[in-house]
Length: 374
Image 1 (tube, rainbow, N blue to C red):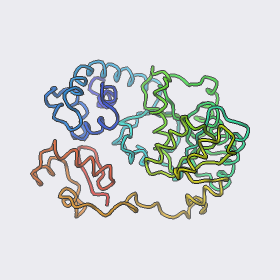
Image 2: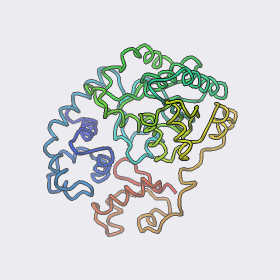
Image 3: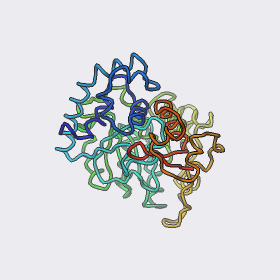
Image 4: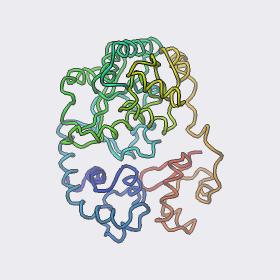
């Protein structure tokens, strides 16, 4: 088991001072060989863009413990039949991949298709009012009548989240809960029965936290970026001026995803956040599933939907770049070959490749290979 490459991928996420962006950059720099982050010396690590002396020191000091955690997690997920999905895998959600801070790995249970044609996140306050509950159920019911091909994402929390999941179950739509803790528990415990029903009805659960991780407050921000990144759009049903739902909406907005909000009365505390999103043009006002479906193009009959736009359809004109010029004829080029071709050292080439990948001009393949995506 010690030679299992998955251990190093998990271990990379457990290194001190390394978040999702730096973990991905390390993987690119080492040509997809995560194990190199655990064998290279501090001096080599310091040379990697974005690392520096302090982070390199933290990596070296935490490597043994990171691998211990990784080996334990691999044993846990194998025993409990949990899927490990890594960023280079064919089933890694393409919507999430497009996000700069996409997780290197995450853990999933259930049969939900995370690359489904239509995915919607529904979020809101934990202190949902009768109005919020009614609008959530009404929205999901309306969507189910428009298409059975919609996956509903939320956070399994109290309030609007659990209402969204239960409404999806009631009206026959698959639904996925994104957790702010490891797969060894369900929080809150009272939602365990709903979570089991989600798994039984072609839905699922996922998290990028290892088992043993408690639902600490700071974990919910990390959870919210997955909710936003997995979906085509995010709908906020009810929210105060501050809270997790507004954070999720802000993240979705930063990803360039569609954000929608149900308006409420100006003196209702849990409509203040929705009204704020609408007023600041971060969210489009909707009042029904039909309005939402029309703006997303989901009101076309199943099987007759318009082809998905290229993710570069509205991108800026392709920038002048010797690196992009090398891919002008559609070749797939390994990073070492590209380095020789352009006479640019790999450690200087890797950051530019990452930037072009994030901008949508290149796509990374296993083995440090890149191909044009324009």
